[in-house]
Image 1: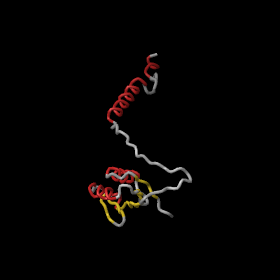
Image 2 (image 1 turned 90 degrees about the horizontal axis):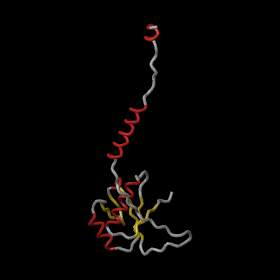
Image 3 (image 1 turned 90 degrees about the vertical axis):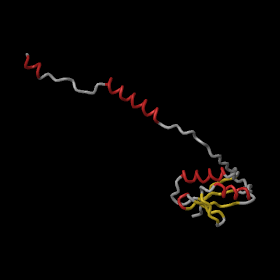
Image 4 (image 1 turned 120 degrees about the horizontal axis):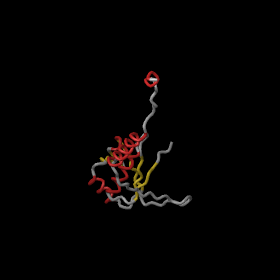
Amino acid sequence: MRFLAMFRRRPRGVRLAPLIDVVFILLLFFMLTTGFVPWRQIDVTFPAPGEPVVAKELLVVQVVDEGRAMLIEGNRYPTDDAPALAALVAERPEAVYAVLGFPGMRTQTLVNVVDRLRRAGAAHVSLAKTES
């Protein structure tokens, strides 16, 4: 009888009570440490299909140097130079600024360029695509 008691198997398995406690602690940890960033929205308006687009002036903004600079009418503007961009936009406030990216450009870089133009005072910012 004692011999059988020595070789009796214990039930193997994972106890759920401690596991659930660990899961809830991890959930609480990640909820408290996650940064909550307020979302900002970029307004983009599209013309109706078939509607002609009339613009006074179109300036193509070509993004170069991995998003660190812009070429506008052959002039180079660093994206961090807010006064120069504000002066350009002040000269042509009603112009449409069409942002032209480069192949493999990250979306965040494009958003940064559009945001910098908006902060400089550009009322009409659009996205452009190269013809292939």
